[in-house]
Figure 1 (tube, rainbow, N blue to C red):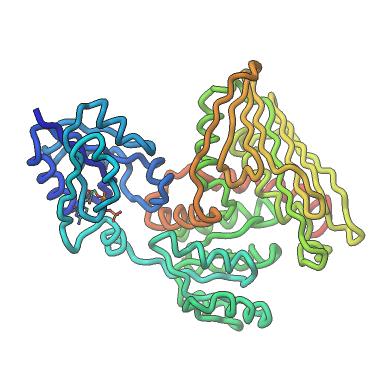
Figure 2 (cartoon, rainbow, N blue to C red; figure 1 turned 90 degrees about the vertical axis):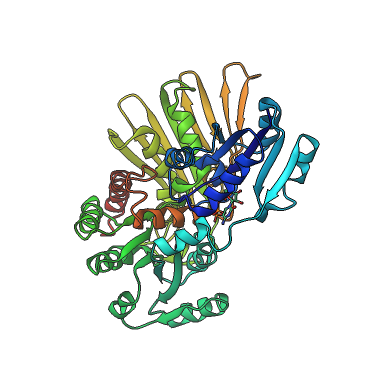
Length: 449
Ligand code: CTP
């Protein structure tokens, strides 16, 4: 019996997939089809797949060509499968010519002509409207956003808004290769020409910009902190829901595949009951930066608090018993370094954020059987270990991470706009509101609102 194997994502199943499977089956007597997992696709940088794996498997099954369907979830699996199943022929479409020649050491490799003028990428583009995105604020993060948005299909940055002409001019220079319309006067006019906005302006302006955009039926991705009070944050999520638009807080680590994997490991029971979470985020800002000189809205906590609090809320939940802060302030009263202690019924947590103090940017989750340690910078989550009492046992994880992470957040935003991420648990409205509640405690103490 001649065994044939082929692999693919088979997203938005189309004629090209059908014809490939039909011809693959005709090459032998028994066809094995490998369908990629979401995790593997993310790992190899394919972050915009629409159909969940079960639907993609179901579609392959429906063709009747596959005698066996397997999932492909890691690099190097093809060689393992070929040997495991005694495969005679490996085949894929001609878009891969040459890529799989290394498999010739194990079996025959056949590249089948690709069906012209159809692909999942094409369908993803035509089935859904491309989201026109406007950026509010034109600082460094806005520049990075423009560059990263290219990697998340389904969205295009078309305009930017900032009344600060000097900042706009710098942005224009840095982003000169992109066609981005600039608005410096009327926010309402800027909103009229976009479907969604990314709020990357100074902290104190977030709430107003977000509210106006939501009321104008625009989807919103907002940099942290979303708002300064729990009430405001709740109000914004309510407006989003009433207007049927997406509101997402841009805490990028929450959307990274490595951090998702870390959460899964923590929640799997591998380290037992979780008793403590420690997260640190520090970046020394230049002495004259807004973050250090804005006596009211600057400081380490408002800048980085959301980053360090996110894993705590994700892992230990929204129902903490108490929260306390301790800061080292500069002469303006802005915090250079802040430690946040959070107490839960049966657990505790510490978040540390620094703007003029540098510390190790790691995340440690301690449990009754062992602990997870994500080395600095944990928020990119490119590697983490699970360690135990017996120090000779270490489970090491190295999730894939591409770009600077913003593309995962942007892809999640697009998926939500398209209705594919409705049940997404990556950062829920409730969790975002819980983070704002802690922000509120801090700003109350500082007496700035
Ligand atoms: N394929 C094909 N003809 C097409 C599209 C895909 O023969 N028009 C083949 C691919 O070469 C591969 C298999 O179908 O062997 C599964 O491809 P997959 O990557 O899932 O489909 P694409 O449409 O190419 O997906 P994308 O656009 O996301 O790359």
